[in-house]
Amino acid sequence: MFTDLMEYGDTEENAYVLDRIKISQNEILVVPFTMKGVAVDLHYCEDEGVKGYVVCNGSQCLLCRVGNKKDGRLLLPVFLPVTECIGVLPISTSMQPHSLMPQLKAMISKTSDDKPAVVSIVTATKGKYIVNANEYADDSITGDRQIKNFMKEYEAGKVDLTSVFTKLSNEDISRLNVVSKIMKIKGIKLGAY
Image 1 (cartoon, helix red, strand yellow):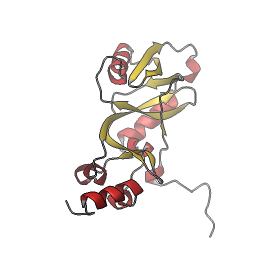
Image 2: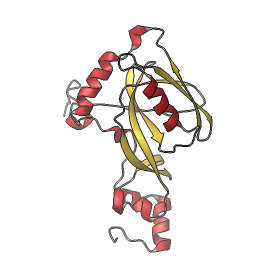
Image 3: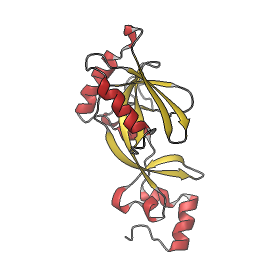
Image 4: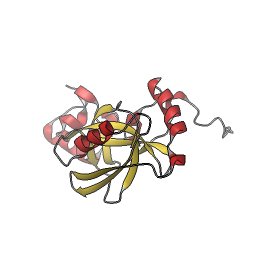
């Protein structure tokens, strides 16, 4: 059976592909263009099949039940001027002085609506960031077209910012090596709450 390459992936659920931004000691440039983010709870998993953050399944989440720590994040869409695409910046909800949230909020509140600033972000140490705002030196890479297209889809509910993280059902989570062992030790049954 043949699949037409031009039609492949053109479903509503795959309408917008986003990149998750990982902040490191290498500077990353972002252009925040909206204050409308999505709050999400995540679990960090390190198992054979999964290494990274997994979206929490809510009140009946198996990862919560086995004692895997839950971390809150605000997912903020931003324009990436280097790659000229939209990315998702996961921001810890911590309001400590050198954490990302208060510094980014201060930068966004200082920028004018007609000309957003390019914000550089670098990890100084674990949980501490250096955030600076810069003027655009080259107005040809403002992302106006990409931002306009994204916002149209985002406001129509066609973009899922959580898609940058792994989503697993409780059944899939129960198959993870560490989780299945904890379930046996603690006597936790899948589906029994």
